Length: 191
Image (tube, rainbow, N blue to C red; front, side, top):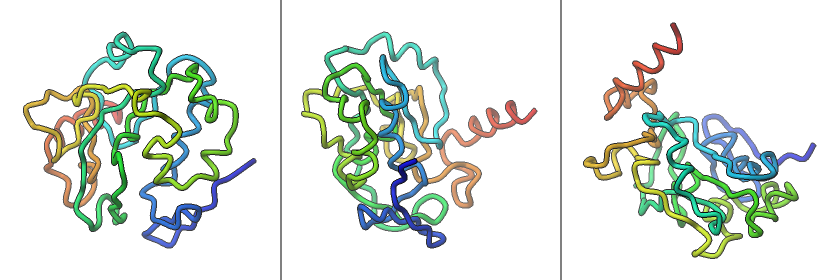
């Protein structure tokens, strides 16, 4: 089994290929979704999200001429520490890849669908900026599908809330917007 080299010097995880920190163990595995799904539409989302709407509604509006869909955030976070003591990094198209809908049938995704090479060898900053795609192959979702707590316009009614700085169970993030709703959902699943 092929593996992307990484190092875990607690509390900072390091992507050896990128020679840069990564926030989670799955930071680059999202780009294996077309390889795993093989055909049709396939969704990847970060694990720090709360779904508030039926995601099937989103799929009804997608154009098969697009290779991926995402919310095209203009997000330039301050340098420092974010969730769980991880270093905040900046790169082009930051947070676009946190909620990605892949069109696995699109010819431009064949490089991901037919091989694990790109996901295992390219620097994360290139993968996360969707380097294998032309700009017009990236479809845009409305901001309610990846509402960044503390960043997205608060007038947006989120379908998906993204606790990108830290989840409500982490110290310092207990009272962020939608934290009570997150806890309600957690309690329903724990019951």
